[in-house]
Picture (cartoon, rainbow, N blue to C red):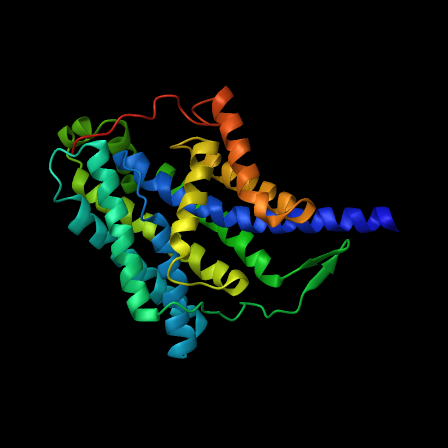
Length: 300
């Protein structure tokens, strides 16, 4: 019985880690969407997640809009904010350097966070779970129905983005901009439009992540910063610019944090995740699936 109990606990930690890691993976995918087109590291990515959760609460809980319509409105609203970030904070910068772009995205993060605090306040907000909160017991683990929604949305996002980038003309144009922006211009691709689309897609993915995680862990105005740090850690661990790497990196970080929090102490989970990240980068600086040449910044 003790062995079964221990196995059940480990399975519980694994399920929790996969759920949390799926959110980190979606944040990491948002980082990669923008990086693959522009080589920009968007440190405001976590704020898109925060806005997704809080905006969904506003529409569904405060305004009593049906959940499906509220979901669509939320994703559209945050996507529009992503477009505005490109138009107002990125595009006006001429001949950007690495430091300039980092400062710009960090500044955007502070602005969005301050606006969210002003509008929603400092209290955390809850969102009803999509399929209720009655847990499912399986092999000694207690699984919330929302966990399935989190993992399911990650799978859907990955499939949709894979089809978009591999099968559509627009997706291939975005990949062309990532390979060589100057050559893409010569064949008639509107590079600025592709950059704007990358911010829109990144914001939309972030909004989805914020919506599906809020019923599990609540959402407040300052959650975006930590989610951005964890998502960026997943990107670096998996390999900057690699979508499969983002998923693997996110899941690894989530599982490590869950195991350390359950078996040792929640106070050490971030430290252990950082140690694993440093060890991977020590032996493979490009990350698990990344390309070693990740340090260039395009001029646009």
